[in-house]
Amino acid sequence: MSRDALRALQWDRLRQQIRYVYDRSPFHRQRFTDAGMEPDDVTDFSVFSRLPTMDKEDHRLAQQESLDRHGNPYALLGCAPADQIVRVNATSGTTGVPTLYALTQHDVDVVNEMHARKYWRAGIRPGHAMLQALSLSMFTGGLPLSQGIMHLGASVIPVGVEGGTRRVLEFAKLTKPDAVIATPSFGQHLIEQCPDITGEPARALGIGRFFCAGEPGGGDPETRTILAEGFGARVFDHTGGGHAFHGISCDEPPGEFKGMHFVSEDHCLLELIDPESKAPVPLDDGAVGEMVWTFLDWYGGPFVRYAMGDIVQVLTEPCACGMPGIRFRIIGRADDMLIVKGVNVYPQAIKAVIDSLYPRTTGAFRIVLERPGPKVAPPLRIRVEADAAITDSDREGLESELLSRFRTKLRIAPKLEWAPAGSIPREAMKTRYVLIET
Ligand SMILES: [Zn+2]
Image (cartoon, rainbow, N blue to C red):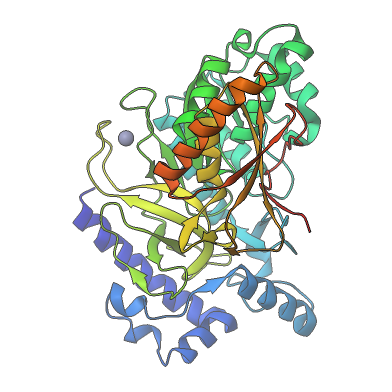
């Protein structure tokens, strides 16, 4: 579909979607009222961008108010009658009370199709087996992702990260999957642990494709190299759970990362805003901003201008793989952002610098703060591990190399604190890189 045809389809669906939510959801209707608008006033995309954004906290408050006043969590945000809802998903809830998504069968079909699109584009076909090592619980990457794999016609082995490292590796050895889906940090952990647990290096598992999800590391060249070499696999980064926003990287040129192709533009309108001022940021090539979603053609509880707190960069130049449409990179979380002497720093960017000196560094690190950010009094303290084989004199060279990379890549001059190899905790779930130590 041409960009113009796609834009016309989005506009058509957007108009129907905002009329639908306005008529059915007291929460969304109130947002229009607050902006002094009705659905018919939205005559183009720029008028639409004047509606206020909603964030997870708004979602959580609406959910709580629904429970308090109406005895069910969907009263204010939900749009479909209860007998049309066939599945409820939730965000992982690691940062507070989980936020719920209620889906109709139509919505579930859309999600399945989006997952199938992503894996199909990465070369997965019926006959392939995919071992799922993400959280399988209410998290949107759990059951919805399994169903999407089945929808494509491939088979899913849903072991889940909850099973633990040993179980994931033993099932990988037993079932011979063509692909593994996990967070990049859990992937690195599997590579580290594989020889001890299975008696062989991770390469011997014969996994052809490693799909990163749940963390931004799948876009970092250094992390990708560790995973590609450790598993002997092609590495893809992808995103999208039980909702309408989905993207997957391609493999052109081989081994490089050119962002994730946005594969669900017919179901999700993407906007960028400035994380501080909330002003719209035009989707020009290279633009960076906080991602804002609006679902199109969605029935259960459509999100309208939902700001999830993810900072992304948009890429609009044609990709070498030939796939049309825009691409994006996830840069970090707006609430993880640290400001050091006026420079915005994301933990993921620090990780990329440390990983660039792997295997002399182990890749494990923590940012040590005395009080929560985002403003940090310089110097930024970073606790980092050198490989056990690195001598004291090697470490001096390593330290000056790391500091020079921090200076040129991130424009920061941190204070490094060396920790013994293996002493920083490895986490199977999403790693929290910031440590508060008073
Ligand atoms: Zn591409």
